[in-house]
Length: 393
Image 1: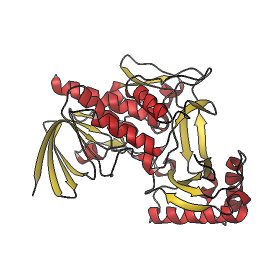
Image 2: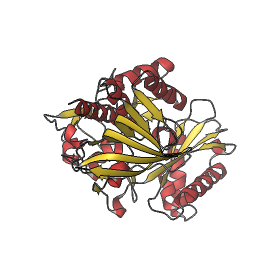
Image 3: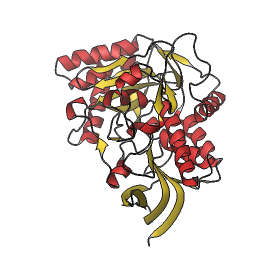
Image 4: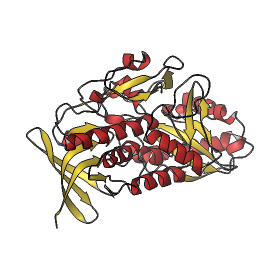
């Protein structure tokens, strides 16, 4: 049986941006419905087994003591540091991150959403259709384990990661040429690491680069990173996955097992290690981006540009995972930040639609900075609040 729902603001996507948008809309007084096809909150942060949150802080000395943005960014920082007193602002090269445990992040997001009486959350719900009328999204069709849903929102915030809902409604999105699309990610957690020191971070990519050059492993294996875990003998291997491979999910898992076997044979520290957990899916770093009222550029980012309608601040560098060269950074000047204007969040072709997270209106290179997790949280909060205010106007 078809079930009908109505809401002031519909947020699609239960990742960091979607949670931020849902809370932002609910706090602004809107009856808010958050839907996503995964089984819980976190999106890429949990599926990718991320170990730290980037994009929260300014750069430069001294080390920051609070996030660059107020609101949910500060609240999440307070929550995570309260849950784990051993964590805090941590230097990562020229920038700063906040390490976290996945269970702490999920519990914090759930608690923040549960505190909002105007917010309803439905996991395991996939959006399959969106219909326009008079320049606005009027109807959204979805499916869950119990059948079909017909949702009538007054406003929409697309936090799907690739503009999936606005594209279903007929809006045009920007795509990156196939050769420039960034590498995706696949992580695995291992235990049984022995006598590891800081050099293991260097040994892993060095030996994998050698194996790649010799043809023993695929070329993208050389971009693998090793990250120590929280417990003795625990570690994480972050692998890169090329875009548009046939049978990509299965091949990514096969690559992960091949990489681990090679490292077990090559490095004494990993000889007795074993795989205990793998990413449930390949995690994209880049997807399609909405066409907004303004498109943020790499010059805006690196030039630390400010805007009259600047809504979210970021100091995260342009972080490119190139198919040919792997990871590279382009930094802002120390102590500087840029602003993301509200116009980047407003979908130009749809009167009642906003976007947040990876799919905001930005160029390929600018997006490589704006997609940072901490930035996406504040983008979501801002977009949700704007959608709610539009509904009330």
